[in-house]
Structure formats: C-alpha cells, structure tokens
Image (cartoon, rainbow over all chains, first blue to last red; front, side):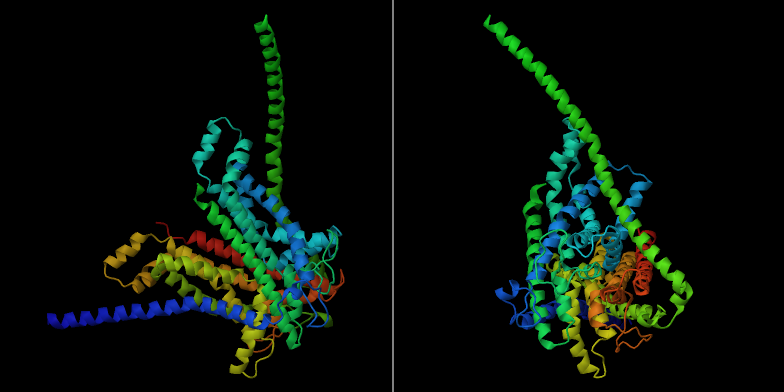
Length: 292
Length: 315
C-alpha cells in the first residue's frame, strides 16, 4: 500500500519536474525570439546596405538617381536639429527636475505637475507633431523651419529628461545635502556646488538617451514639414531642413527595388550615430557610477 | 608708529571687505529668489504643453465637427476625405487590428521573457539579456517599417500567396516585436519586487520553479503585468511609422489581416503630407483623427496607472 503511494508520488514529482524543465526551455526560447529578431533585423540592414554604404554616400547630397544619392542633407539636418533640441530640452528638463525635487512643496499643484509629466510621456509622438504644426508653424508663423522642428522634438523628449534628472537628483545621498546646509550654505549654493556635481552623470546619461530617441523620430517631423527633397544642409534657425529618418522614410516608400538598398545604407548611418550616442551614455554612467 | 599705520590699513580693509561681503550677499539674496521662479516657469511649461495639445486638438476638431457633425464622424463606415466621406470607423478598426495582432505577439513573448529573466536566469545572464532586449525598444520605428516591408512581408507572401504588398499582418507582427521589451521589462520589474520570502516559502513546500513562477510570482505581480500590457497597447495604438510604411493607406472596414488598411496615425501622416492647405476640410479632419487617437491613448495610460495603483499587492 505504502509502496504504491510512494511510486505514485514519485511519478507525480517526476512529471512536475519534467513540466518545469519543458517550460524552462520554452521561456528561454521565447526570450531568444526577441534577440533573434534583432539579429535578423541587423543582418538584413547590413546585407542590403553594405554595398551602398561608403564615404561618398555620407558626403553626398540627395539625388533623384539611386546610384548617385547620399545622406548628407539628412545627416546635416539631424545634427542641426540636435543643436536646437539639446540645449532647450536639457535646460528646461533639468530646471523642472530641480524645481520638483528641491523647491516644490508637497501640494496639489506639484502632484498635478508630476502626474501631467508621466501622462505627457505616453502621448503618441505624432500628436506632438500636430501641436508643433498649429503652434510653432502656423500661430508663431515659423513655417517649415529648423526651429519649429527642433522645438517640437524638444517638447517630445522633455518628459524623459525630467524623469531621468529627478532620479539622478534623488540618488544624491541626503548626508551630502545635510552637510552642506550644516556648513551654512544656502539652498542655491547647495544645488550648484553639491547636488549638480553629484547628479550630472545621471542627468547626462538620461539626456543622451532622450536625444537618441529624438534622432530616430520620424512622424512628428513629417507633420511639422521636414523636407524630403532638399539639397543643402541648414545654415540657420529659419532654413529648411531634412533629417535622417525622413530621408530613410522617403527612400523606403519608393517602389523601385534599388531604393531599398539606399534606405538600408541610410539606416546603417542612423544606427551608427545611435550606437555612438548610446556607447557614450554607457561610458559616462560606468565612469562616474562608483563615486558616491 | 609703524604698528599704527598697519592697524589703519587693516581697518580700511576690513571695512571694505564688510561692504563687499554685504553687496555680494545682497546680490546672492536676489539670485536666490529669482532662481526658483525661473525653475517654476520651466516646470509650468510641461503643463502648458498639455494645455497646448488639448487646445490645438479641440479647436480644430470643433471646427471639423461643426461642418461634418460629430455623430456621422464616429458612426460613419466610409473614410475617403478627398471625396467627402468622413466616417472614422475604418480607421478605428484598422488601428484595432494592428493592436490585437501586436499584443498577440508581444504578450506571450514578453511575459515568457519576463518569467525567464526573473525566475530562471542567473544574475549574470539577466544582466546581459535584459539590456540587449531593451535595444529593441531603442530601434527607430522607421527602421522597423523598412524591416516589415522588405523582410517580413516577403516571408509572409511565401506562406499566404494572396497577401497584399501592404497588409495589417506584417505591420502588426513588427509592432508586436517593438513592444516586447516594454512588456518584458516592466513585467520583470514587477516580478522582481515580489519579496523573495514568498518564493522561498513556496520552494520550501516543495514547489518546482515553474509552480513558484505561475502560482506565486505571477499572481503577486499581476497588477504590474496588466499595467505594462495596457501601456504597451497604448504604444501600439500610437505607433505611426511602421503602419504608415507597411500597412498601407486604404481605409477598409475589415478584419482580414491580409489586405491593406489604414490606421488613425497613418491617416494623419497621409493627410498632412500631401500639401494640405491650412483651413481645408482635410486639414481639420486630421485634427479630428488626432483627437480620437489622443483620447484612446490617454484612456489607456490612465487605465494603466489606475491598475498599477489600485490593485497593487503590498507586502
């Protein structure tokens, strides 16, 4: 009797352990799917784009023929956009974070601002495009210019920078704050000499990641009128502009097969820029992480 | 004598220093008062952004509804703005189709990845796989669009020969891949915050790891998982470039994933891109569609926050 029960129990345990093993493999392979798709995506881009990707492609203006075209207008436009976006979004974002963490009282207004920021992070990017179109392009009469595109992107990535900066400020140990106040420093002196130096690595990392999101954005720029066919790099805030994703979108939507190769080469340039930015962010984070 | 002169000199210096100190302190006091005001104005900008979004969307769509009627907009089954048909339902079913396909892809993969990373993987494996998975979330959507139309669609064509060049299936699958890291990462965070003591208790009672995962950790982290999924749905609804490139621009009231459709977001791109003149009916219809999109995503975001707050298990 007892022996039979034991074999039954043993059988059940074996089944349960087998099930555990099966699901373990299943979960593992599911995790791999995401990674495999990533590899396939990169492989596809490389196999299609390598033949067209060279120094000439990077330094040539767009042309109506696939074998003569280049991404210089897009690359220059993206860099020009970043020259607008980086100072605007970082100054406003870090200031907002400082206000919320250092000055704001715990009242309804503060809570409202906080909830509002997390909701803004969930607004689809194309809706920001519509905001930019009505407000910057038409109401402020900027037209389809670099500054309109740059300000639209700045608003778009603002929530990301604010949240990252808040986290960086919160990570500064309280001892440092108290020591600074204890020495008779004012709040502003504490912010400038204690908080900011300690929080800046985190803020820079967050900002670079946010900027790399802005670089990849296509939809809002289409709405605020980034140009697809343009043969110059922007030379002022009020000049027309393009951007790398805009060029890629334009090439992808052409029906002829050879433009797919051009698009892949464009994607390679875009991904290289993103890779460099992310590597910088990781480098900064690792370099300054252990200090506190 | 010498000593006196020295004392005089010192006196003058001290006086000066006191004055200097006072004036710099006054300056500092002014700056100390100005800076918070500046910081507050920056913080207020985020509220202004929300107000601006609501204002622009409302103003232009009210003009639209005044001309076309709100009721015929939300119940109309034909969308062809260039011929004067403004029924938004085909765009909504298009968006719904993309959302359903993408969640069918992303939820199982994302949840399985989260369980593997949180319950099975060693610390070292987790620390390599999780960031790599998050790279998927950083790939620009225009790149996914290219991938969908130049890689996924040809593969699908060899399975379903009748599939269109532009179709909902390809776009939906790729949107699904795009939101996998979101579900995986947020669910994994939720599972990680389940206390180890619960796991140890279950393991001590003789549970296998699978039983711990499915009967203890997942139920305990359920609110976080649901919140992550709802957030991912919101992201899929708002996704623009993949569907613009791969799903086409033909607003069909259909649930056939093999034909071309149009989503809310894809119409906004199409309607704005074609040199739409300011103040034309198409211009206003873009904002009405934008308003619809905004309402959907906002509802999802609020729902996600509500679930995460309301149903959180506290330990």
